[in-house]
View 1 (cartoon, rainbow, N blue to C red):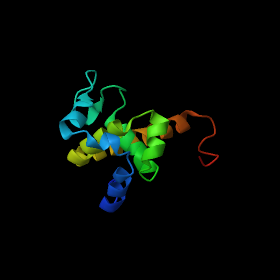
View 2: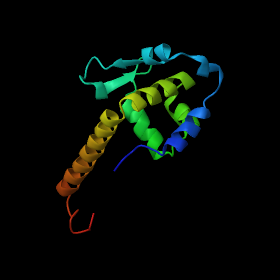
View 3: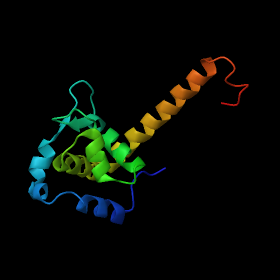
Length: 126
């Protein structure tokens, strides 16, 4: 399962970002992202000012058809924050997609284990 949207859809999504912040240079965007000091690995980068992990933001946006306005509102992010997350994702697409797949698999495994522990779960077909 590839998470990457068609290039055209991602380009259209990033074009909807407000123009005033579009003047931010790449170095400034890169500065908005940092390694999580509590978790090692380049897949655990987060937005410096918010603490949200890039993989979580990208997974959220993917599940909402790359709706940037909704992502900004739901996560309380600025245009620059979203651009920084997308920029990191574009530079490290394979790494971020692998992390998302592992998180989703972990969630499914946990949900299944919880179901098995509940009484009557298997008999009810859940």
